[in-house]
Amino acid sequence: MKMDIKTFVLNKAKAAKEGARAIAKVSSGEKNNALLKMADALKKRSAELIKENKKDIAAAEKKGLSKAMIDRLALNDKRINEMAQGLIEIAALPDPVGEVIKMRQRPNGMAVGKMRVPIGLIGIIYESRPNVTADATSLCLKAGNAVMLRGGSEAINSNRAIVKILRDSAKAAGLHEDAITFIDIPEREAVMEMLKLEGTVDLIIPRGGESLIRAVTENSRIPVLKHYKGVCHVFVDRDADLKMAEDICFNAKVQRPGTCNAMETMLVDKKIAKKFLPSMIKRFRKAGVRVKGCAETRKIDKSLAPVTEGDYYAEYLALILNIHTVKGIDEAMEHIAKYGSAHSDSIVTGNYARALRFLREVDSSAVLVNASTRLNDGYQFGLGAEIGISTDKIHARGPMGLEELTCTKFIVFGNGQIRE
Picture 1 (cartoon, rainbow, N blue to C red):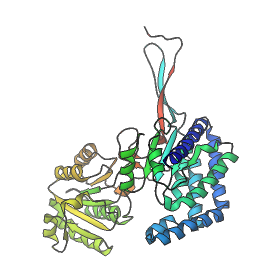
Picture 2 (cartoon, rainbow, N blue to C red):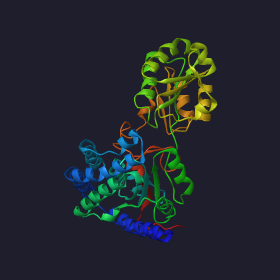
Picture 3 (spheres, one colour):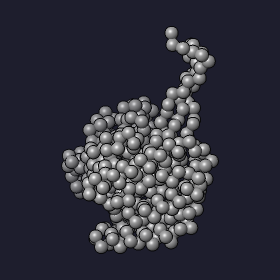
Picture 4 (cartoon, rainbow, N blue to C red):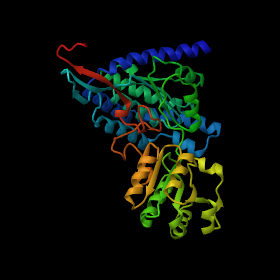
């Protein structure tokens, strides 16, 4: 059986690599046409998708999965239309492939520059949401890459149906259908075999919880773009506009607490803590937030639950918040360096010098001044779409849009130059 799974995955990867070579040569117009055909087919074949999705829902209910998990799995006409609209929007984005950047003339007369090119074959390993199948495929294809998909076993029927529609549409548009490849067996060993395919698969992007991402990173022989978790902070400086600070902190925690860019710890300068915290805590509580405080914070509000050391490392993904009072910006940045996850961190201040210090010294994928951490997002940053947020420092950092799904190569224009 082991050999069978290994051979199955290898054959899928070889076919996908052929697809990668083919899609890299395709024009922007051909890619856009294929994406629009895919969007149209998803809508026209929605009944087929919903039928397959019901199999996954029934299996999830039988396994006793939570209502939240089942909701993430569910497809309906509205969600299918949203998937289709995502493809239409990606088709409308500028194509980064072939863009020439940083051309400069050398003393010997040759011109040296860089050109954006596809990465090649990208493996996407993800959980739960079937919409990721269409989102990841469309982004990879637009950037000239083939995609090798491995979704969670709980959505296998839904994902298989989506992939069939996307492959049929790609073929109808004249694209190589193996540019979209799906590992459609539930065995975990298939993932392990996929992660061994260095030289065939060029990049792995895991999307899901911390345990999935750590498992992928620990076992992969292929470069991985990832973030483990989002332990994000907002620091309210002594020179903050307190009304602005209250609105930013409330948004960062409450607007959508289950996301990786939601605030988990609010840091408050001791100089303004007594003035700022009572109304801020009241507002949080009214919204259903369970608030924990450090010893200094609990002097201001004795009803707060105490924060433990481990709480500062926690990604709650829920309406739970730590509050930590600090002596100033240096202690705030030390706290972020110790407990943060290099994801999204913000300062609220009217002091220009401290704002610049925070921007320079906080080592995260996005550092914000007078803005919510919830804004660290491809759409919000003007990328049009994203495949995820990377906290790595090599190749891509922060929201990964189309440009981050390409790499560059040097190009040289000469007129007979040789090396002396």
